[in-house]
Length: 155
View 1 (cartoon, helix red, strand yellow):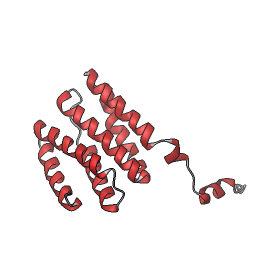
View 2: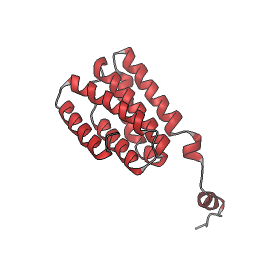
View 3: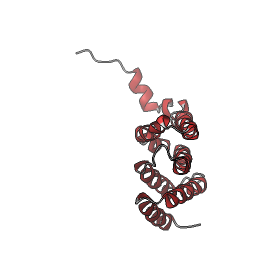
View 4: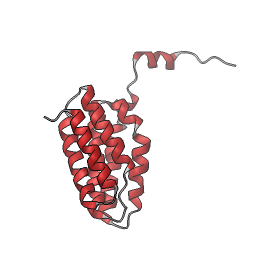
């Protein structure tokens, strides 16, 4: 069990190197991120959430070329796993990243490579099914329900 600060530093360095143009390192960074999401996604402590959120934020800024199967497929898979892990642990934080995630992933629907389009579709399905599910978005607190029932003041 690697402490979250150590894991964050290792992944940050790996993503920094990968962003400088090494596809092999980018693929490894995405696979490592996927493994972290699998492991940390089952935990519900603040350090786990912060690690998942930091990695996901970093990933969403690094976009492999949409015609490159070798880097796009691990990127989309890791993005999907990261969003799922964050939705399970901290739905509100996942919702805060939806716009960026949809924008990033949506670009891959225009890829000339069928496997990339399929992976992008799967990731968008994860966003809708896991992050925007009725339970997470539409379940209102008592205060929210009271506010909705309150009469609207006419001006």
